[in-house]
Amino acid sequence: MSRVLAAVAWPYANGPRHIGHVSGFGVPSDVFSRYMRMAGHDVLMVSGTDEHGTPIQVQADAEGVTPRELVDRYNRVIVEDLHGLGLTYDLFTRTTTGNHYQVVQELFQGLHDNGYIIAKTTLGARSPSTGRTLPDRYIEGTCPICGYDSARGDQCDNCGNQLDPDQLINPRSKINGETPEFVETEHFFLDLPAFADQLNAWLDTREGWRPNVLKFSRNLIADLQPRAITRDLEWGVPIPLDGWRDRDDKRIYVWFDAVIGYLSASIEWARRSGDPEAWRKWWQDPDAEAFYFMGKDNIVFHSVIWPSILLGYSAPKPGSLGALNLPTEVVSSEYLTMEGKKFSSSRRVVIYVRDFLQRYDADALRYFIAVAGPEATDTDFTWSEFRRRNNDELVAGWGNLVNRSISMAAKNFGEIPAAGELTAEDTALLEAVRAGFGSVGDLLAKHRQKAGITEAMRIVGEVNKYFSDQSPWKLKEDKARMGTVLHVALQAVRDCNTLLTPFLPHAAQQIHELLGGTGVHAPMPRIVDVEDLDNGLTYPVLTGDYKDGATWTPEAIVAGTPLSAPTPVFKKLDESIVEEELARLQS
Image (cartoon, rainbow, N blue to C red; front, side):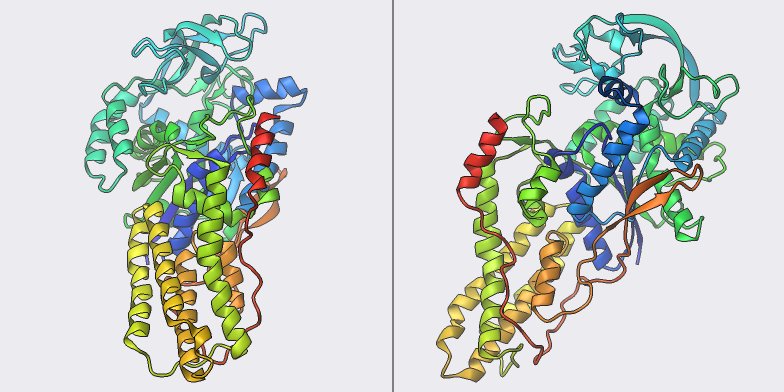
C-alpha cells in the first residue's frame, strides 16, 4: 500500500460554482481518489475554498457586506454543492482559518530566510475613482508579446506568458472600464528565475504527464520573472516580517496563500485526526505520491510556482516543517463550454451545480464529465448530448441490464439462483468482466478516465449481449439452466458495478443493495460544522470515513441471497428538458 495525496484546486469563494468548474477539479479528483482507495492505497484528499484577494473585497463592497460575510456565505454554498456531488474529501476546509495563516506565514518566512523573497519597488494599479488597488485579473488590455486584446494583468491566456498590469497596452479596469493609475509601491517578490534549472531537471524526470501540461510548463520556465507575492490590500494573510506584520494596507497575495492550502489543509486534517504529525506521511515520505487536479488556467501555479515554493522552503536550510515533497503529477483538464459558448455568469451562460442537482441526479453529471468531459481537449456541454448520454447509455445500457437481470431473478427465484455447470459462453463472459479490473484500473491510475469509463461500459455491453443471446426468459422449461444464466449475469452485474463505482458512487450503492448487499459499498462525505482550531470561529467542512466500502477486486455473489423487484436506478429524461433548459439560458 502506498500513500497518495490528492490535492484538489481551491474554488474561489466569490460565488457558487458551475458545472464547468467541477469538470476540471472536482469529479476527476474524486474518481481517482475513490479508485485508489478501492485499490488499497492510503489516500488523503484535501482542498477548500479560496477566500482572500481584492476580487473578494470588490464584490463585498458592491454587495454592502464585509469580506468575511461574503466568504462565509459562499463557503457553505460550495461545501453543500460538492457534498451533493459525492466528492470524498478527507478535509475540505477554507483559507481563512488560523491554521492556514500560520502555515502560509511559515512558508513565507522560510523562503525569506533562504534568500528567495526579495523586496522591490514596482508600479501598482489603482482605481482613479476609488483610490483602491485593482487586482491584476481585473485589468485587461492588449498583450505586448502576442497582441491578444483581452490579456489579463497577470497572464495572457493566449500565449501563456506572465505579465504585470503596467505592461499591457491600453489597460482598462474590468470593474468600470476606466484607465488605471500606476503608482510606485514596495512589495515582496518570489525569485522564480533562481529555480529555473531545478524546475527543468525536475520536469525531465516526469513521465506520463499529459503533453499539454509538460509543454506549457517548459515554455513558462524559459522566460521566468520574479513574481509579486504581496499586494496593497486589506483582506488577506499578514506579512510576517518586522515593520510589515501590523500594517493594514499590505497583505500576502492570494495566489501565494492559495497553493499553500494543500499543505495547510493536510496539517489541519492531521490536527483534527488526533495525530498532529500524521500529515508528514504524505508530504515527507519519499515513497508517497502527490497528484494535483485543476483546470488548465491553473497549470502555472502548480507546475512552476508551487514547486518553486517547495524547493525554496526545503533548501538550503529547511524551515521548521522540514523538507517537503514535490508533486508527482499535475493533472490538468481543458475547458468545458456550454452550448458552444464560454461559461459566463454575467451573460447567463451558466448552470450552477446547485441548480443542476435540484433537477438531475449527481451521477448523471458525473457520468457526462467522465465520458465526455474536457480531459484532454476543450469540450462542449449541450443539453441534447447530456440527455442522449443519460438515456442511451446510463438508462438503456447499464440501468436496463441491472433492472432486467435482478427483476427476472427475483420473479423466478426470489433470490440469487445457484449456478449449475458453466458453458464456454458463461466462462468467457466471467473472464471478460474480471479482466476489466486490470484494464479499467490501469487507465484510472494513469488519469485516463474517459478511456476507463468507456472500457467499463464496453464490458457492460458484453454482458448485455450475453443476456440477450442466452435469453433466460425462454428457459422456463429448463429452470436449472435459467438459474445458471441469471447467476452468471448477476455475477457480471456485481463486478461491473464495482468497475463503475468510482464514476457512479450513488448508483453503485443502490445496485449493491438491490443485489442483497448490506453495509457501505460506496462511502460518501458528510458536512460537519467545526470550530476553528486557533480562533474559535465555526465553519462547515467536508470530511468522511472512507475505509469501509468495495475493494477493486471481483467478489463472488452468494446463491440464496434474497432479491426483491428493483426500482429503476437512473431516470430517463424527456425530450422537453432540452427546450426547457435552453429557454432558461435565454431568459
